[in-house]
Length: 497
Image (tube, rainbow, N blue to C red; front, side, top):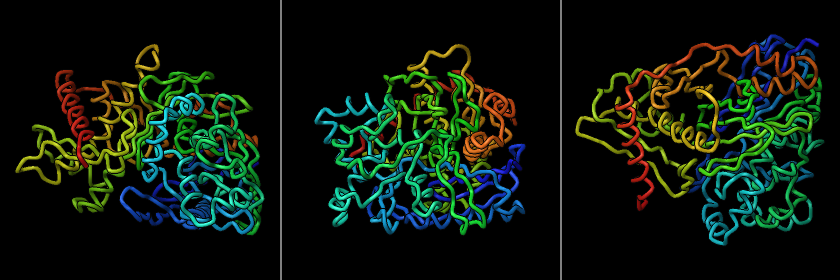
């Protein structure tokens, strides 16, 4: 085999495809943004056809950039935004409604009712998750209950539900395969992570017929084959993982105790806890990190809804920067005085607070606050939120030795941001040579499955450190900043809005 792998990375704001060669190096990229839809306050949707068509175009662009024919590709690996839900007609492949995005908060009242009815302990015990609109189960129920005729069609077995990976595979195989992997299934509120199966009791609780659900496979498996007409040759789809789990694989966090954090639209930190799931006492999520050869590895996860999205807000909402890359230079201009705190709860707060009703707020404004202070506050908010997650993880998991955070994603290109992250964590932050670890993880799952890429141990040896950021902030300053942050979060959660 030539060892070329086509990795599809279907994200929240853009679709990307990367061709990796046998040395696991990037040799061709295609990327395309697609529209976001906000029909009501707190609602976020994508047109499912935009997800599919943009993915198709970037795959073709990546092949062209790599100067390769499809016949030279050994396999496809897919990684995706995880909790976004699509429901479509099994015969026509037509979606019955827009994809409801993981950021969407429309089912908050439904989640609160279930919580008041005392159902959260059952849900958490079986799924490792909390009752929150973030997860896809309540989104599916909303579609069935609010799209005319959808409930009856679902009961008749005419509809299919899937996270974005399932939707892409359905289209790649022209409807021949309705499948997902264990990591994506574990984010639905419908999947029992202990038995590794869809749970009839949970499906009944959320009102989701089991006939809608895809077959669940290992993260490296035979997911189907793309039809020849799409790329000029049929391509086996052999690796699938949700984006944060794929990044965990791409960062080679295979040993219990290893931690990675990905900084994209949101921020997601995962701690590998090995073969046994660890129940969190600090409102973190227990989730499947990956499932290989039928063996499940678990993780504790902390989810931050707004990281890079805060920089997008500076650009698109406030207009204080022209491009995301301008943020660091602007932040460096901010005077070192009493800090400005931005709590970016634009779509509520994720872990460890899980407050869907919180909304963003800025504290510490003075007459001379300006764009540079907002830029600095936006970048610092990522560090503060990560500190909240790491504190919760350390309370749940007593790790031996020093915690080292492996980071990836677009925001990690900023040295200033990564240095502040290290300072506020009081821990080293390691940035690898390959920042596209999410796509790399999906590529390794596919490449290893077809025998074109090495096993876990050799893959881990390929991980290379590009730069380590070591903490240099004085403890007194760190504690003062953290005290201000915690007060800002507290005030945000008490907001009447």
